[in-house]
Image 1 (tube, rainbow, N blue to C red):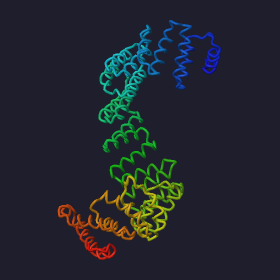
Image 2: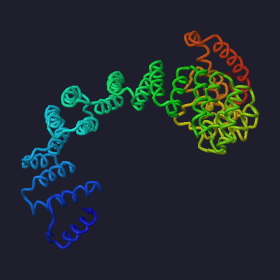
Image 3: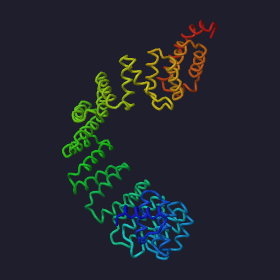
Image 4: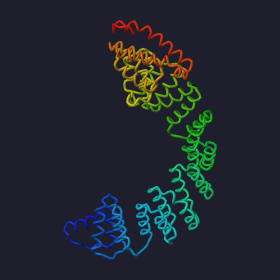
Length: 464
């Protein structure tokens, strides 16, 4: 039965205002096709058209209730359902959805149990019940439903699997793990279920059981590269980096995506501070994919930790050339260029920093420094005040903001910041909460501020 032809013929009659001949099931198909297009009013109109032809058709009466429910006309849907006398599975599913919309748990549960106990019900129908519970966030109904499903069918492993997924989504991992194990008791050779269990244990940081589940899966499917790689992730996340390297090398042997395997090996070496080895594998990855900005970023990081600043800058420039939206690479590049006193280029990268809200203070402090070097004192002062909001007791921020206002010729504001800085430096309670290095830094800044007094006194023409 060609639905396009049916709709074309129906729409022709509709346009002419006549009633052509259709079977009830054809009109139901037309209505369902409109539903798939999310044209719910048209779906209802097709049903009403059919009811003019077949006013007692059970399938059209039920379809009318479904359409009204889709349109949010709950009471009209309820009234339409009362006219349906043939209580099949579709009827009970419609009743259940109506009661879910009404938030009537007791009536919904009654409808679900009617479905499960029906002689027509299959395990797939039980899974549809689960889906409705998930859609309407009614997990609390499952303890009442599951025992009835278990008593109704010999093999409920497919149902348990879906329930496990639902509990995972609700972060009830203990019940989810129990259900996966029940599935595996029925079918111990299910690679997918062992893998699902491994991922569940990994999410809960139970890496011992995650690795064990990976081993069971690999005993059944020894060449499954997804599981081989995932076992490496488990070692990596559990800080077993030597084991992660060896596992990722096994992944390298079986995967066609060598660049990914090289990168994973490099990451594990990097975590062990074996930066030369990390660089070796990253270069192998770059040889395959020279447009991956993250590979260049990782190369830069490893060179940075080895003290190779020029190499780090080189690879960071390549990273941002591949992906100009990589803000992390821009920030680190700006910080390193500041160290190299390449202020103009440093500013170009650091000025991309989002200031409102200010999240990362390290590049912000670098931006303030480079603005001072470039005599952009107004910008430096703006950033420094944001930094002070983040860290009220960092003395260098206060000294720099005083200098900025002095350089801008705003001596009154500079004096106010002097007063604020001295108030903190003289606060014994605040100083007692700081470590020895911070207290010494405040004393040094206070001594430096004292030297600024003569300058400020001259410009303000008064004694401070």
